[in-house]
Length: 189
Image (tube, rainbow, N blue to C red; front, side, top):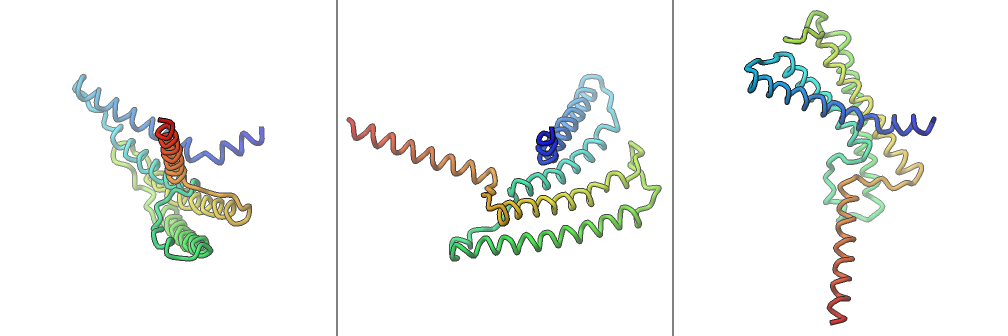
């Protein structure tokens, strides 16, 4: 039971992203059907979909941080000794975490101290504080995920490879296998 809960929490951003995506696409589809077939526009669906999309983007950024899948400029690493890139990645991650902590501070200050309590969304009437709450949540969660990835890499010694690189490696190994099979087939004939 404990492992299932830990596994769920480790993938929580993925579950949230999938749910938000399904919900806002469904809302937009319902809006289109309502408008085109029934000639009636459901006003609140567009606004809610926009807010859900914003939350989706921020949770997606946290999810990609967990997968170590954020875009990085790495071409210069090929020109360096092999021991240097991991150190540079660690330093850039520290800078990224510092930026995230600054954003947590600024967004928390904005949401809880500077934002007018009477600001409400246009159609839904939801206090905007709840919409903007994603900022401190996402930057905190993203920092935790960056720390988690670096812990796995540097403390536990695990290889953390982003999904795109894994796919590329599979394709390359598949191409090599395909070339080997082609060479064997040509050698037999």
